[in-house]
Each structure stands twice: as C-alpha cells, then as structure tokens.
Length: 319
Image (cartoon, rainbow, N blue to C red):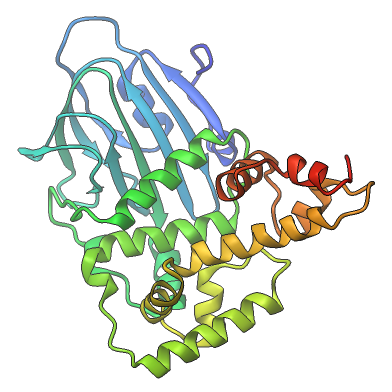
C-alpha cells in the first residue's frame, strides 16, 4: 500500500487505486459507503484498501488493523456483496467462517463485529445492468441478489469459491484490464453463486445438450480470435446458461468458460510452436484476445507447464 493519501475522488476510482486511512469513517466516505464503525480494541487505527471501478461494477479489497463493530449502509445505487477472508466474523449475530458471500442490501443496513487484522472483499453491481446480463444468460435474476432481508448469507458452493478467486486475482493483477469482459464474467459468477447448487438444475434432453454444444463450438470457432464471453454464446445461440454449463461439464468435464480459456490458450500455443523466428509473443496473444500479458503468462504456464517464451524457444524460433 502507498503512504497515507487523501480520500480519492470519484474520478480516481475509475482506475486501480490504493488508499490508506487512519480514520475508518473517512474510508467509508471515500469509497461511497455510509458507515459508522466503532473501534473495539486499543491501538492506532489503520485501514488499507484497493479499489477497481468499472463502468457497471466496483471491486474492493481491504484490511482493518483494529477490531470493529461495523454498522452502516452500502451504496444505494447498486447491489453490494461482501466476502470475509478471515475471521471469525459476527454477522448479524451469526458466526461466519470465511469465505462466505454476505449481502449488504438490507433496508436496515448491516451490523457485524470483525476481529483485528480483518481482511475482506466487496463487489458492487449496478442492478439494472445485472438484470440485463442475467437475461443474456437465459435466467432470471436470482432472488438472493435482490433480497433485502438483514443478515443474508449465500450457501457455500464451488461457484462462490470461484468468484472469490476471481476477485482476488483482479485486485492482485496491477493495472490490469478491468473491462466489460471482466465485468460480464463477474456478473455470471455472482449469479451462479447466488443460485447455489440449485443453479445446476436443468431439464434439457440429451439431444438438446448435444445441439447446444454444437452451436456453442461453432460460435467459438467463428470468433476464435476474440475474447468471447459466455453471455455472448448464450445470447447468440439461444441456449440458457444452465443447459450450456451442464452440456459442457458432461462432455468435457468443465464449464464453457474454462473450455473457452483452453481453446484460446491452445490457439496461442499452436501459433508459437509453428512460429517464424521473428514472431513476437505479444502479437500472438493480442490476436487471441489477450492484452494483460502478466495474467496471460500465468494462465499459460498453469495450463501447459511452461511459459510462452519456452514454447517459442522449443520451436526453434526466438523473440
């Protein structure tokens, strides 16, 4: 984190912003939350945060050095959710073991007790945009996302773990590219996390799922040089997300997003392995829709066990 900074302006939040505060309620005002935190233990308070703001979503990671009785309201113009990363946390008199997804959308505000050294994540999403995205996935907005009851907690699921991982990755990625593609993927992960295990229910037939895969793969190949979104596949093929997800998991053992990632990374690898001596890795990655080279290299190595430069070197070419 950077040294103590003044409260960031709204304009400052349109790009990655690291902030540090010595007064907790000033932190709340800076990030647009109406909070009234009461410090419970002794010592000078210090709050660290990292904020990423897109056109429809805002992601924040934070750390509080002191223990607090947390009270207040999330921004009224958005749906907001939190994920504690350590604990224990008293959430509306419920004992929470991290990580769990908590809803900040109660009409009466939130009320919790956090320990010293508490860290967490928040995700705020424009409600009208989320409704549009949900429709593009072929499903209604889950009731949990708009429920205004106090103390609401999502049931634990693999989808909630994946959302947590994605938020942490975004915050750790430096300047990165927090673009519409990232935002739509966050929307999908949030919707699926809200659905929980019931989100996997699907009444399609075997033939319908076979057809769904055929349509989806044709679309992926027709747009193989683009950072295609699952929402685009659902919208253009008319296949609901639940059916598409089930079809891909049955046949490939992974969801459509994971398949898309492997297809794009595989295309990069093929080009590097067959590339001429003057081939530039960045040019190939860009051609397959990758612009954040650091994240691209990490994803590539995770899948293939080597860096793109090693693939290129093995092909006999060089940078």
